Image (cartoon, rainbow, N blue to C red):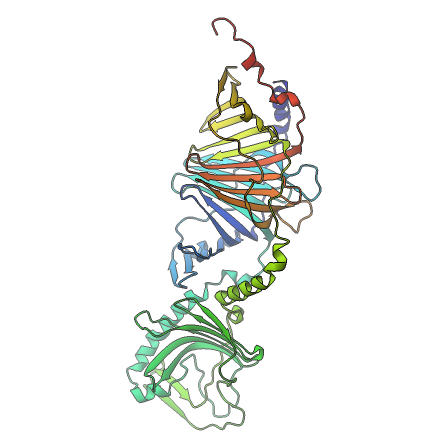
Amino acid sequence: MYSILALLVVVGAVYAQVPRPCNSPPQWESREIRVDPSQKFMERRRLIYDATNRRERRFEEIEIGSDRSFYDQLTLWNENKMYQVDLKTRKCNVTVPYRPFFQRGTFPGEKFDYEGVIGGAGLPNEQVTIQQFSMNTTGDARFSLVSSPDCIPIQNVHITTKYGYEQSNYYDLSVGISDPMAFIPPRECEEEEVFRLFLDRFHLRAKCLSADVLVILEIVCNVDQPTSTRLASPSIWECNEIKVDPSANVTKKRRLSYDSRNKRERRVETIDKASNITSYDELILWNENKMYRLDLKTRICNVTVPHRGWIPRGTHPGEKFFSQDYVGTPGYPKERLTVLHYYDLNIGISDPRVWTPPKECLQRMFLVAICLLVGAVSAQAPVPCSSPPQWEGREIRVDPSQKYEEKRFLAYDETQQRERIMTEIEIGSEKKLYDILILHRENKMYAVDFLTKKCNITTINRPFRPRGVIPGSKFEGEVVIGAAAIPNESVTVLAFSGNFTGEAYTGLVSSPDCFPIQNIHFSQKYGFEQSTYYDIKIGISDPQLFLPPRECTTPPPPGY
């Protein structure tokens, strides 16, 4: 009890020096894990964030074998537009944002809650100092966890009447935007809009065309006015292409990107859902002797050599001017196309990523490489590490279903399966303080109400649950909390997970010493439970912490 009194005195001194909310970087990239307890799922995605221009790009990580949809989302709040591409069907949907801009990191008006250390306190390169800020307004509560002193976002929790409980954890964060083209709408969205406008104009011109004239059209694009003295076509351009095959009675519409300098082409055919004709996304790299061909319906990729040699489009060296003709109505510029026996296109390439092979093809190549390396790597695959069996620290426990946050001092002894918890529970505006001793091997729990001094002794209603890595868990990956590029402001974290009977588990520990950082449990019986640990120190400072509280061993006074 004396330690608690001393703690209260220290708290009074600390609050006299309360830090004010820092300013998180306005532009950064990271991996994000978003937790939605109501839906019982975790969403993993790549996040590119720009608070200055109020825009975000989110690439969800596809889970192979999953039936749910995964998306590439670009949200531009200043333009009131959201582009969303289904990563399986490649279909684009353009709408308005479904919610206002949400500032990540710290938020103006938040107050300081506490400061702590994630990882092993006192261990070089295995700890990061954090600060939590929060605010409560009508129907809206926010909690922001950032690193200190540079205010790198680590976690945001947002609880609202409209959207419920939302939690985002950030890993592998890098300050700044590495690719400014990340905020350009996805190609599928641009193609859909551009090709629709193109077809509108093309149908106007097609009124005057006969079937014979259509056959001679190979490319219909933005075409400059012809000049008989022009002998060389531009080397890099892109357009919408209409390819007609009279023998097969097939007309294909596709987006063409052309680069004669590097001998490469990208052709993305338009899918005709009413037709049984297969449509493809083809990338042909003649200098590398490779052709990537993705079936746009089945999403199966085939990697082969080009089926034909490189053929330049436009003029060929040595050709001479033959003639020029008009298709459409002469005298009406908006209804006229110039068609030459050589094509004079001058557009350039708007998106250099067009020369990157389709994701499905890269995944296939990656899986092949993994199969070759798995024998060597499996011997080095991380196995669940062993967290320290005895330690003391601070714990923040969140229960979204009950809408409360619990702050604890925790003394933990895995060897003897016992815990001492001094906790502050905040439910709405009400705070309660308890001193709890849990002895699993004796199947007893002692709980003392700090305000009434009343002790309650009960049996334990749940089994002992190890903190840190649970035996039988599998390794999921390695990430960094904080900013890896900033000295002493990041910690390397190992992620483990497990699915047990009626319960799913995810655990984060520091590397290499396996200090517990966070545990998340989904269970049918207890719902969603999350514990985050700070200021961990190995060992138990006072062995008497595991003796029953004095209030539980001393008989109460008469009439109590």
